[in-house]
Amino acid sequence: MMLRVLFRASKSSQTNSKLCSVHMDPKAELKLYRPPAEVRGMTVLNREAFTQSITVPALRVSLKVLNKVVKSLKSVMIQRPGLTRVVPDEGSSDSRLVLLDPQKVTSASSFSGPEEEALRAFSVAQELQDYELTLGYENLKSEEVLEAVLPPGQDVTSGFSRVGHIAHMNLRDHQLPYRNLIGQVIIDKNPGVTCVVNKTNSIDSTYRNFKMEVMAGEENMVAKVKENGAAYEFDFSRVYWNPRLSTEHQRIVQQVACKDTVFDVFAGVGPFAVPAARCGATVYANDLNPESFRWLQHNCKLNKVETRVRTFNMDGRAFIRGAVRDELPALLRHKAAVHVVMNLPALAIDFLDAFRGLLQDEPPPDASLPTVHCYGFSKEEDAARDVTQRASDAVGVSLENRSAVHFVRNVAPNKDMLCVSFRVPREVLCSSESTAAESADEPASKRQKCEDAAQTT
Image (cartoon, rainbow, N blue to C red; front, side, top):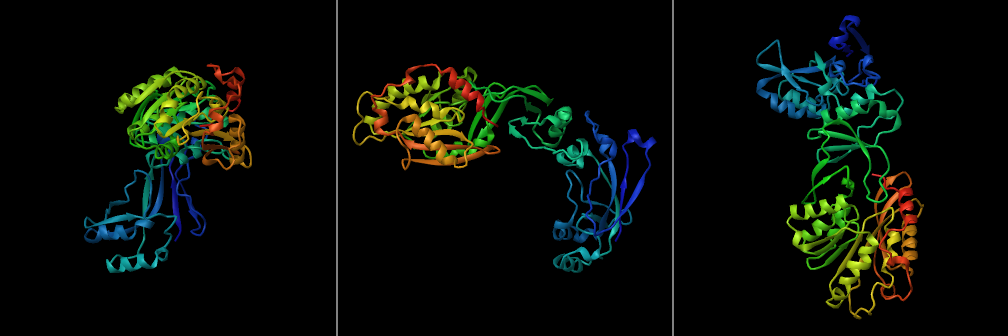
């Protein structure tokens, strides 16, 4: 069978274009959608320009067996967004035309054994009809639209992170001239997305947020999301939130029992603190960013856990040398399980020295020493060994064979995010070694290090 593919220009350009037909060898790979040439380089979205007509194979099927036939031919029927695959048969009111995928069905012999058997059982003649089908912008996938618009040979991305109604993209330089069109396509093709933003710089070293520009849609940055059963609200432009960490948040919280105590050193808007409190734990949550602190308090109230969470707005080291040091002796005497979460991968390992000499008095012999879950980035080939060694250097004792490293995710080529977990050694907590950790302010040198190792979202 020879397939006839018709290309029809958009209404706005039909006066200068002719309807043409292209005959293709059925053995050759057929690309169902071949965009009109005039859409290449488009920067302002013109949806009508993507309209074209193609001829696809169809089967005439009696209404009496239509549902059964459709079920039997599901794998070879045409699949396009928003496309009706069963259409009226102009030759008969007692039958319909079932549209087939021209990439899978080129002749009557294209049907598989079970499909042929079903057609015979339902008395459907295996005679293919030509049906002229109009494909519009609404029937195209986002990557098809962008591939048609962007210069050939350059990578096309339609991927994004979704945060409530906001789609967050990281465009490359060659995509920037098309950013408004890309943003509109993302909104069109993803129900519920009403705002598309592009990151314009690396994450801020102090508050872990980044500058962004709105590519399309409304400029409402207050997102509402649900994660692991909890609800969160926050201004996405002023705080840090990464939807890719949902599984990691859950992994840590599952280690927390009802009567445990959690110290969240870099709490953000509460993705560790809130679910831990919902599990019945007592939580001390801190973040240096005033906006994160405000939304943290808001989310505690939103999830009705404000009575189990004490919130702090200070530097992480000051929080460890303050709230953690104040509360830890009593918790150790009562043999309570304590977790310390340190999720600031660009810098958290450098804060581990704050545990040196944290306690003035020796903990009881049977005390359950606090478990630290500290996140870090590594570009080393043996990333687990790297973060373990750096954590060991920070606390002042070797953590080899005393810690566990969990791979979280790859954040960039040759850059991994990991979590090293360990019980703080007794000799660290009771060390008499003097440390610069008493400073309540983050050292300027470490601020610069954080800038150099800014997180990749």
